[in-house]
Image 1: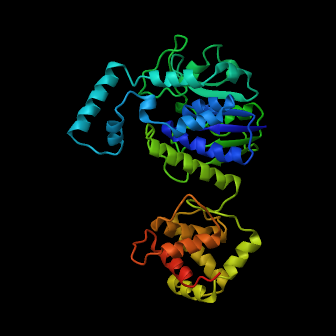
Image 2: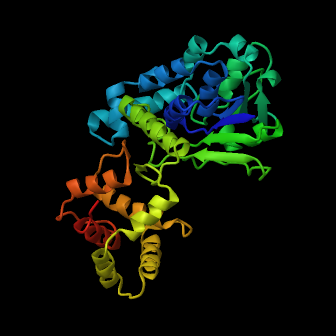
Image 3: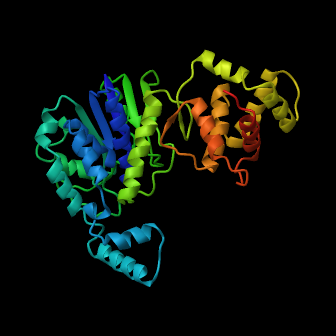
Length: 381
């Protein structure tokens, strides 16, 4: 059975939506979904087979959709655009939050009431589980599937999974709860306990606790953000849409086995990779040898280049040769602000760098810059 796990992370949950769009376009389906915090809320839409609505809600999200805030002032606070008026507004907001014992969740409750259908979730053939922490009972973590939740209280329990300490947290069944991310922000194990053997977990880059996966024989693949997703409560429309776009392309990296870490490059066969390495050209290797201060065969030179660049860029030592060359290219592409959201062939990627090359820019990684400079000056395809 294939399961889906959605990690908590507040507004970063917008990344889930873009990733899911890509997965569904590639024909993926899921027998069960678990999530924590925003992952639980997003998971409820998946459990009721309502991805289109989930996408629409996120795509049109605004800060005032969830909180009683002045959007322009709230955005200025997030942008650190401070002046006297902003400080006054922030102080009033702080006083209001204190008077209500935390940020009110009225709007979040209204959203759940509007979009989540408990009956549909219970009748769905998709397993659905959440994580929350029962603070009334010695901070007991709870991993609950839909059948474990009392009838008529599913939406209440959903919200408890997202009970951040800053919120005014209504009691549920006379008991107190806190965000499930305090125990397991990426709940893979509940699906493993149920016998799932193929799991895709969509992460948000959160630093909240995660429980160690209990069975190493289970196939668990992670889709991770290749860039920062912003702050926990940054529900600005432009930030949300950027996260959706990032999620979409980072999931395509997974489904289509794209190369690269920050960019998206079509995969090469082993023969194509070897051919590319062999055809870099004699002059490239001669100039690289001068930069690296080494001599030897092409393979020895390339190994030395990989060793040096791996250290400079902080890469995994076990990368293939073509992967390291793409990493070198990426470091320069980032400096040049090359268009990110595009799937390149390796040839297109190199040519895009050549077209955007600026000899006057200051590289962050000097060795990679020098190696790429030699490559593009001698590149022939």
